[in-house]
Image (cartoon, rainbow, N blue to C red; front, side):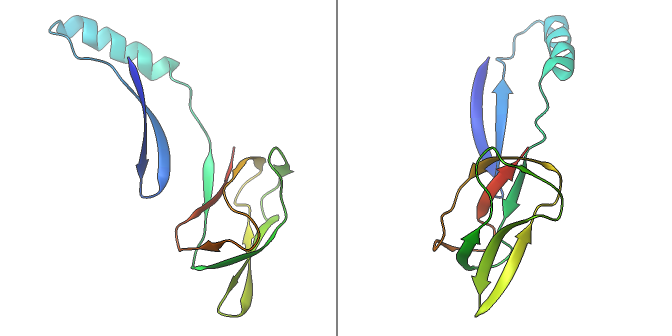
Length: 112
């Protein structure tokens, strides 16, 4: 079994791939077991809705947040836009710093 990391539409995924064998019954059993034993990740990436500059970061790695908490203030077109947490969780990764310029779709942080 090999583990790969892929990114689709700027969303990262972890993929496990098993080499296919000629024995159909063995493959079916393995796939059935995998479907029940693979851990599910409930990580949500917070993305920038528009191009701009990170004006303020209100969170730290490992911090617990609630839905609606302001995570970032994004300055775009001379306006300050609040980027809020869509769900309760823990901040697992912050990908930007204050003053960083971002494009639309840039992953700002992850919440699990």
